[in-house]
Length: 75
Image (tube, rainbow, N blue to C red; front, side, top):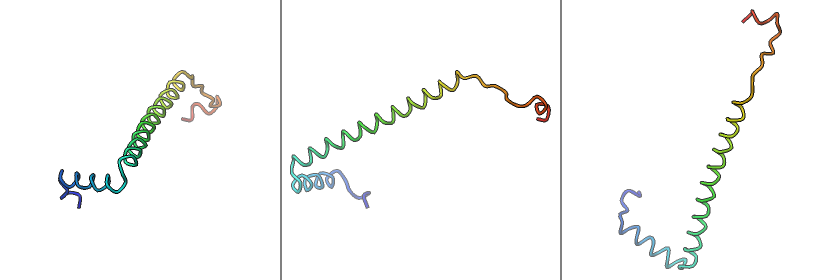
């Protein structure tokens, strides 16, 4: 359905939205969308930084073998 909409169709849709909601509402909505995108990108970056930090912390820990002495040769 959206394959048939060209540049002229998008302009007509934009004009209709602008007439229905007004410039102030559309501007405020776009501002909120921009803030949401920025917040989403910041969350992704913080999450990847947290995962990387946890990975770095795990690599510095030493691993001990706690297998009882009589069970070590059964592997």
